Length: 140
Length: 145
Image (tube, rainbow over all chains, first blue to last red; front, side, top):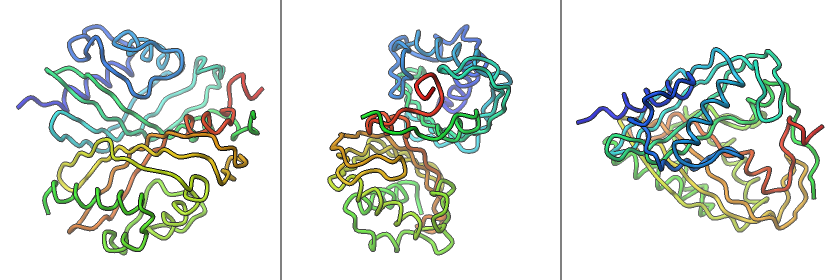
C-alpha cells in the first residue's frame, strides 16, 4: 500500500519551501482547491502561485505536523504553521512579526497525485498576529 | 472501539448539533472533554460549545448542516461540514444586524475519542468567507484603511 501520508508531507514541504520543481509528480494538473484564495487561478498553476505568494510574504515558513489521519484516499493533517512576515500579504505590508497558527488540511489522492484539497486555518488569529485590527463595521 | 464505530459516533454528534438536539450530545462526550478551539470567555467543555451553538442558531435560525466528508484513523475522526443559512438574527460578534444575507460556510473538525466518548476537539471555520457573506470588511489590507 502506497504511503499517502509521505506524499502529502512532500506536497506541503514543497508548498512552504517555494520550490515547486517536481510538484507535477505529486499534484494533478487539474487539482481542485476548494479554498482557493482570491485572485489565484485553479489547477496546478494556482498551487505554484500560492507557494510563491506564501514564500514572498513569509520567511522561515514551516508547518509542524501535530496529527495525521489517513482513511482511504484522503489524508487529513493538523499543523502548526510558523513564519516571519517579511513581504506583502494580501495588501498587508511586511511587519517583521512572527506568527504561529493552527491549520487543518485535507487532500484526496488519485493515482498517487493530489486531485482535491480543502484547508482552513485560524485566519483571525493570523491577521491579529500580523497586527491587523478586528472586523470593521458592515459595508452594507 | 474501531475507527468505523468512532466515525458513526461523530456522525451522530454532528446530526444532533444540526437538529439542535443538544441534550442528546451529553452521552457522546466524556466529562473531561475539552475543545482546543473553543470560544474565548465561554466555559470550557461541552457547556461552552452549547452556548456557542445556541448563538449560531439565533443568528441563522434556518441553518442546515451537511457532512461533506468524514475520515477516521485510530482514535481520531476528522469531519468536513458545510453550514448554510440566512442572517435573520444578526451577528453581534461582528456588529452585523439581521440582513437576510445567505451564508455557506465550510468547517473542519477533528475529534479524539476514548472508549466511544469524545475527549478532545480541534476545529477551524472559514471565518473570512463568513465575514464576506455577512457584508463585513476583512481586517487589515487596504479595505480597512
